[in-house]
Image (cartoon, rainbow, N blue to C red; front, top):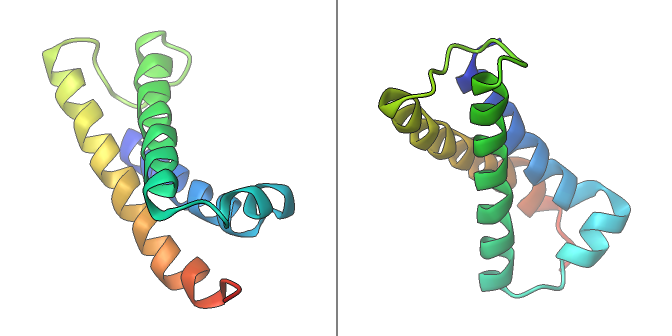
Length: 99
């Protein structure tokens, strides 16, 4: 599995988890738009940094290096996770949210 695939999966899973897991969705749904965006951004940054750290620590082998190029890849991972997260939200969560 590549780092890009992990980032995409993490973004999708976070969106689905906060939309459908009963305890999480009950806590997340009533929050304001800014709060939701901030929480999701923080979770996506944590996911991207975790992939980077696990790769640098040789715990997972996804091809990220621990140098300047690796940091650039970290930003790319964050953007991919955000894209997957928002796409999943628009297609699989938002249409089914309670009004």
